[in-house]
Length: 89
Image 1 (cartoon, rainbow, N blue to C red):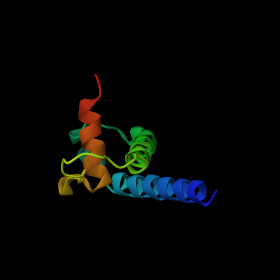
Image 2: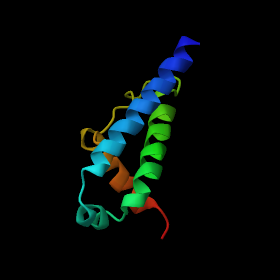
Image 3: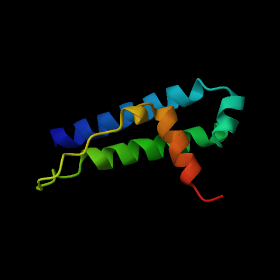
Image 4: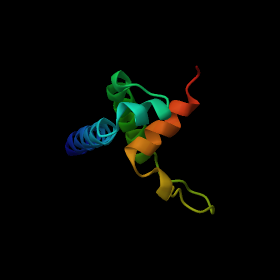
């Protein structure tokens, strides 16, 4: 039960952080990365869901190097921009 509460809290914090970072961008900056202001809640929600899916994955049991997040994708705005460019037009 505690893990479920902690997981929901982390998802909420991730959503909140993504919302804040994307909201700080101007309309021009948002247009440059291909999203509009009305897309911010959806992108923040998708970001938090994807991050929780990554965090809840069981550890790999192989000799390969463990999964390491790219330092360039630590900001929600950058991740949202990358995600938005992969969406079909």
